[in-house]
Amino acid sequence: MRTVLRKHNNRFRERLATGRVVAILRADDPSWFADAGQVLYEAGLGVLEVDLATPGALDAIGVLQAELGQDALIGAGGVRTVAAVDRCAAAGVDFVATTVFSPDVLWRAQEYALPIVCGALTPTEVDAAWRYGPAAVKLHPAATAGGARYLEEVQAALPEVPLVPAGGVELSDVDAYLAAGALAVGVGSPLLGDALDGGRLDELGKRASRLAATADRYA
Image (cartoon, rainbow, N blue to C red; front, side, top):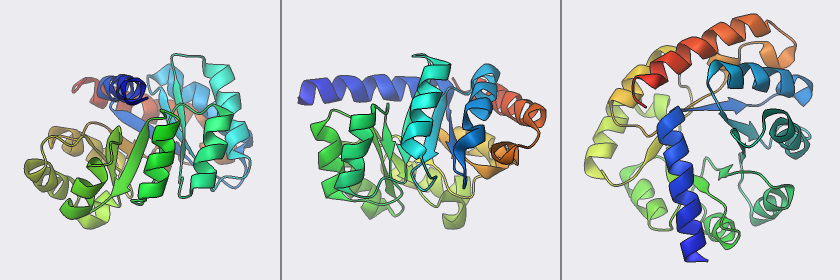
């Protein structure tokens, strides 16, 4: 099992190191997720995280997987309980992500050999989370903690830990986070705008293309 998990984690990290951006989708209604996901994918952003706070999130993930195919990675975010990990694994998600450090959730994901991006903030939390074997650690909320400068300091103290900052990340911040050493950056509403509510998909495409171009410089 550990060999399988290590293989899946390595493959997941390689994909993050190539794409450099995780688009985080959350809304009161997932009706527009498939359309927005297609726009993001075509712009070059192929790693999507659907927050479980969205009603019908797991069904939406299934739709995105069917629409975008195996080249895309579609995961579930906001996973805080063992039961949620069970539901995600049964639904066939590509990865799970948390905003908190929960050993029980980490162990459960590993039982399924399911890559997990575990939430943490302080160096102590990041170090503790990394010892449980996640694919990466989500530094959250990164913007509130001090942004790219804070990430740089944590990365310097824990250089072996792949960090994915998220929480309050603006599009203009992504370059600085990647330059500071982030494996990838999680971006939500500043990227999606009103697209998940039936808004301008063409504008989403422009933002996504600009973000993908920024990420490409670090791939």
